[in-house]
Length: 501
Image (tube, rainbow, N blue to C red):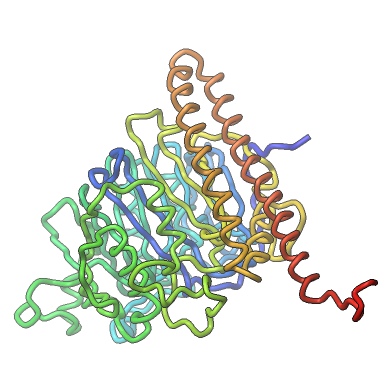
């Protein structure tokens, strides 16, 4: 019998992989999406050996004491008071620390995705360095925000307060969303930050670089550290007379040769997909629009395709590092989908539905291009136990390693094997979307009269979807092994000359 995990237990041990190589993010406003939902997507990249777990954190009552990163053997010695009464929330943390939760929703409907690793300009950082010893890092943000924040704006304000008073332990960008709006938050230097609300008719794309520029302190669409502009003026990073309008990116964040091939091409590619008429130099990242208008309404499937992109078509097709044989070491342009992605996710908020199903995360373990997105509803209360298992060593039980083994095998002959996997996963996702729509319609009717039965139906659908994705993955692994076995035998048959033996 398969056992199901109802809540999470904390594990503790450090994970050494840094975040400096990580992530691509897209945020889309509700008027720019096909169904009026708020959408975002992010690929979390650092190491293929970084198994991820699905965790449900139960609500807490009457708690006292401190949250300490060191208790989880996390990045540093950051600490913050635990909320006396903490809300229930979900996360997808790494296997060793059970913090650095990547993505999650809380019971108030606040969604979090983070972080996008970004970098301050070195000369500004010398004057206001990151608080690497006790500042907040991506390990801690969901643990501080999700038990507390009842709106996305409140979460932005709380994170900003922590950065201003304690400091950021690193540079990062964070997405925060609720039923009304989404925000993108970026650090500048150790104690400065800027956040902007997503314009409803626009989208935002980022790839490991500070992207926010405009700041209007009189507008409710902006939040920032109290002395953001004054500090930049005082220290010579912004001159109102010479520079004109304040530009956060120019004043605070790095923009150099490292962005030209590692970061700019990803943002260029996303904007080319969603706004094909844009004509811009792929190496001119800071001139790319921060917020762009899509030429067609954006769908969940569009964001899945973006997370799977590796320049396989279009103007940058010559930079595809996989289709014509692996050339990751030789290819200068870093693609969105890389093998060391340990998970990617799409988050969707649909306010017209009950929150339990209206807030959904589509989760893909491992490399997005060779994985499948499974819906994880925010109201889910049970999931297969082995979705919360896995370490940095391959095993035969954890969900993470079942996906990773298939991806590793496919990468030994990507041109031949990837189409087999991608075709099967595409068919699965299309069928699952139909099943999902039917389930949601049934849930909406049932929850009005029998909440317990509706919850049971939600858990059953979720578990079945997860199980079906896992079973397909195991079947594909066997199919790909058969193909590889046949190929290797053909190449190494060693028949005698008469070929009678």
